[in-house]
Image (cartoon, rainbow, N blue to C red; front, side):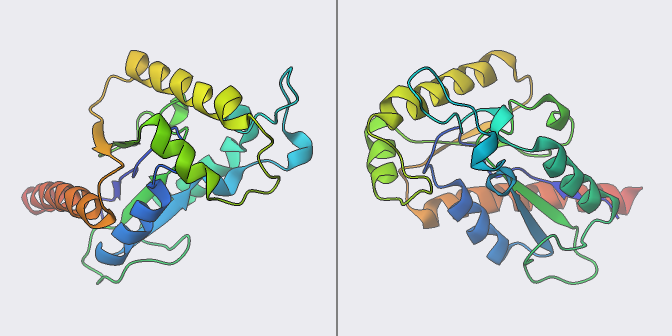
Length: 202
């Protein structure tokens, strides 16, 4: 059975709404699993610091990407085998894997697996506001957002805009959860229809 790998979405910025969107989509999409990049952070003791003493969490080196790739490979070898809670579905449904994270499109080994790609964006002020309402362990030191988090987002987004050659759908992260879910859900359903059509004619 053909499977659909569908990253939703890679925001490259904290508090953009990617995890919420992925979980909401999973409720509505049949036979759907989610892998989150946030689950693959290395221990704090292995995170480097910059010249200001800020922990460098917003870089690929802070993540165990080999473990993440292993989890993705395991799912692709046995599509539909859950890697966590899954959406309801029947045996005839095409398995869907949503991969959500903040540095997906900057990791070259993932380049060839995407069926659909989404990038949630939010402006500086909204991002900073959302970040201030979250509790992190370790907590953000004063100045961390302006000196590290936002500059790294701008850097990684520029890399994507310069290097990515496939289509990315940019989403407005200030829209309501319902509007975002509806937009991506309809797009994924269309993609599923294409895959089912190809299976039927094969």
